[in-house]
Length: 77
Image 1 (cartoon, rainbow, N blue to C red):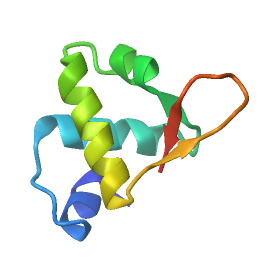
Image 2 (tube, rainbow, N blue to C red; image 1 turned 120 degrees about the horizontal axis):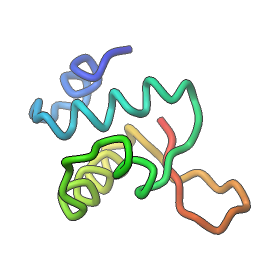
Image 3 (cartoon, one colour; image 1 turned 60 degrees about the vertical axis):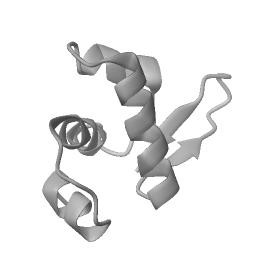
Image 4 (cartoon, helix red, strand yellow; image 1 turned 180 degrees about the horizontal axis):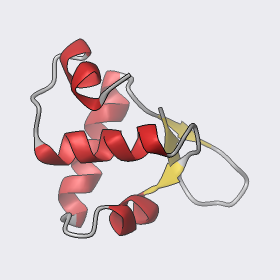
């Protein structure tokens, strides 16, 4: 599974932020990631753009919310 492959499969444009976010999830090896963890991984990313990207991925079914008991919203592929 590659970032480009997922974007093609779900008929989304290939933007840098979308590729970077997907690559972060792929490299996390199945661990759920929070918005703040992704912000740290993607240093030069705008917070609002990241939020919108996550929302789009969730709506398309690429990611889902993961409950881990920490009280922090996390997402996983």
